[in-house]
Image (cartoon, rainbow, N blue to C red; front, side, top):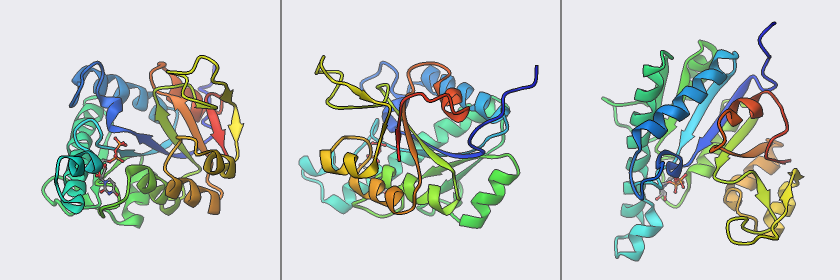
Length: 239
Ligand code: UDP
């Protein structure tokens, strides 16, 4: 039987730093990182071009730092570097799966990662390399969600796959509210109006203004990245 063809040829996968936590309260769980890398490789084997934006919340978030008394810009710079550490771990796990990767950081850190150059990123994807974006946009006061939306537009990704801990977008937090209902699809404007926690408002607005769909799905169910790329209608589509 012929291998299934991806519905989306070029994707931007947004992984939060939390996705690397496993059962740990903090930091990077190597087996969890390896398992995610295996799934990404399976999607890559389908022929999809994959760029990943990785967050840093498992290590440091700027806002958390400010509550401890660190100046916001300094705290965000620490958050940015946290994403670079995650990027190194993910790159290592992917390379161990035998896929060729390139790590592109928005903050210059030459001996570890290439600088972000749009056409170079696209070239890597065309050559079948998995591109890992780190350091968000390189500027404070932004999030890696917004960076994911911007980079997805720049590399002309067809969709953002936003990996989360739950099955999609709900009317309320399904972890705390048993009556929460899942949306199979929802408009950008409704996400903004209802203040639903999908991605931050800047990210949603960018996607809305440029018609870039987002699929919010549960990363904890094995095979879900593949299902999303094959267009199996999992999670919630924001359109
Ligand atoms: N950050 C930033 N500018 C960016 C992206 C991220 O300053 O363009 C900082 C910010 O402090 C943020 C931290 O990096 O809290 C980690 O990113 P994020 O919170 O988006 O990670 P995630 O929630 O996806 O793990």
